[in-house]
Image (cartoon, rainbow, N blue to C red; front, side, top):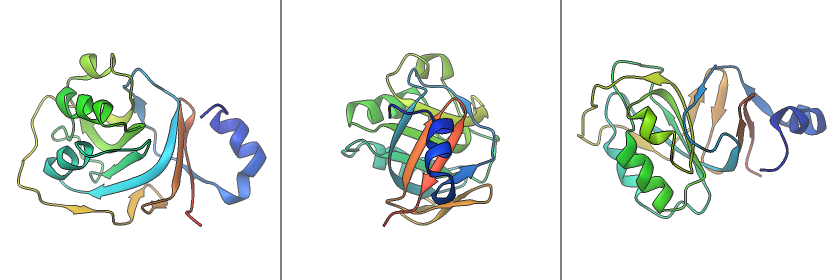
Length: 157
């Protein structure tokens, strides 16, 4: 992505949804974009680990973790797997861990915060379903644009 979200919104505002949830940037890449892949899960990161170990082809994984900060849904090993498999970024409506290590990776990472506590590994959750970041619904294939100012989404055509 070479244009800022503010400029993109100025150009295409009516067709964009702006996520009002305030995320923090954690990856070394703070500006990223790509088609959305989605996971809805609660306190379990097995689906995230599995999906990020597949070819990302520049996609952005959007995880609806319910906004919980009780445990981390991604750490440095899973983030490294995302880098190794060509993902553009990961947005987690929840917490991550290993933030100092993630800060060195060439990956866009946005999350609400951090928590060193591990999540479950039972595979509970759903993949490629609509997810919600505040009032914005993101479905697989929607285009996601992210930078330090926020997140914009366009519906897949």
